[in-house]
Amino acid sequence: MPVYNAPIKDMQFLLHDVLKITESEIPGYGDLDRDFTGAILQEAGKISSEVLQPLNVIGDQQGCRIENGVVRTPDGFKDAFNQLCQGGWPGLDMPEQYGGQGLPYLMNSAVSEIFSAANQSFTMYQGLTHGAVSAILTHGSDTQKDMFVPKMVTCEWTGTMNLTEPQCGTDLALMRTKAEKQDDGSYALTGQKIFISAGEHDLAQNIIHLVLAKIPGGPEGIKGVSLFIVPKFMVNENGSLGDRNSVMCSSLEHKMGVHGNATCVMDYDGAKGWLLGQEHKGMRAMFTMMNEARLGVGMQGLAQAAVAYQNAVAYAKERLQGRAATGAQNPDGPADPIIVHPDIRRSLMDQRAFVEGGRALLLWGASLIDHAHRGKNTEAEGLISLLTPVIKGFLTDEGFNMTVQAQQIYGGHGYIEESGMSQFVRDARIAMVYEGANGIQALDLVGRKLALDGGKHMLGFIDLVKSWIKENAGQNDVFDQDFVEPLKSASKDLQAAGMYFMAHGMKNPNAALAGSTDFLHLFGHVCLGLMWARMAKAAKDALAAGAPDATFHETKLTTGRYYMARRLPATALHLARIENGAETVMALDADQF
Image 1 (cartoon, rainbow, N blue to C red):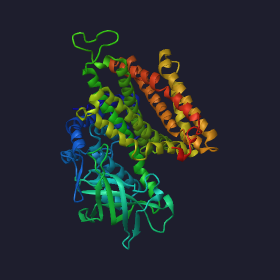
Image 2 (tube, rainbow, N blue to C red):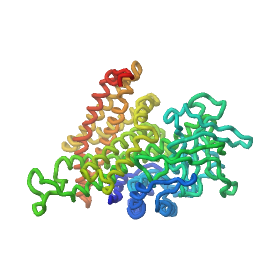
Image 3 (tube, rainbow, N blue to C red):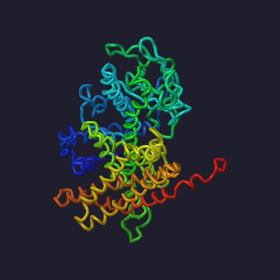
Image 4 (cartoon, one colour):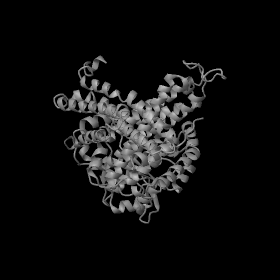
């Protein structure tokens, strides 16, 4: 049976030694001292190991079931959901005026990783609600905020986003769901949405759907899309629940993974809804939720890799198979544990280096969101907008790869359901698809984000890397060799790729787009290289200051050296592919495939 232990020590290191949050100018960060963040993470870890993780296999095995339009979640989910809500966890970073605890988004991100690693399917219910609340807070009227937000913050009511239809996913211009204005100012929505996570369930009293639809007579294509609040049950003026709305889950999808989360086909038959934001500006409002969701999905990829790695390490230390090439390491036993073998070590180091580097990237990204929203910093806003497709695409691609590597450590036993490794692989797989498939993330990065504001944000990231290199080079020859020089080389590959797109993209768009996924991964490796360089500097400084846990910091340096030496050089391969252009990619005619 799989196990999970929250990475509290690593998170504390990132928060306080790397990000140095109490020294930050971001409002609210000064209150996040070690004791306070430690208490939050400890309690989240306790809930994850005692409540959520034991339900993970149950959710996978039982899944959700539909009975006369009512969806039943797996055994134990409702009690666990009530426990989480009573503890105030869904509103951790929500405004206090609506019943939240008002903490920075950074702390919600750290807690979300812990919960998602313990039980991804379960955590999606409150995670989607968080995104819906953010959209209403940003674009809703005061009346809408007062009516819906307080009970969504507590998760008495949950939320969804409804975009996809049978005939359109990413290309929302093909949307058919319509919203007809009524005399009372509401709208009647008719149409069908598919792949709606948590669209129907038995965990909450009400479900507040955010639905994209077109108002007849509006502009053609994507410019004619509006966003609407459509509750499952109507809400009376006093906040009580009224009649059932004309929205129904007609079926559940049978999926590869995340079985414990209900993925619904939703039918709207003249359902009553209210405009959120402005007419024909629905995508602007929806992207408030989608961008947050994309960072959350990146976290899911990391979280599944993290829990899979923990179990792979435990198995590698226990499983006896063969003898070490340099001589028996377990002479009193029939064989050595497989962790003695170099290829097993390589795989475990790949996983460890990714998980710890990815966690640093996620928390840094969360701090940029706080800097942008709490600190009203436009540069941070631009930078996290640039990094969002990288965080989503790179961490989910690599996160899935790492769950497969963890499964491989088990050999044939990893393919057997009893080991639990199959679930990590299956649950991680969806993260590469939903909230915008990773190929779309790469196209968004190269086709839109790079040139945004005249390339200002990309240049800002390059300057950030250059500044770190300049500030830290020449202090120590070994540190330069292990961390500064590899980061410098990788950042030059990133700049060269950007120059290639500038030189060829306008003349031949395919030349740029054929290299978009390689660019996303090149960028992702540079991001993790920067994170490892920053972590190594913090670990080196801690050792020099006589930190009590020398082993932790020495291990951090060793893992960082592995990433810089064995993983970061992948940037050169990605650059070579990018500079090859589109000729070989587009060489076959469609009918030759």
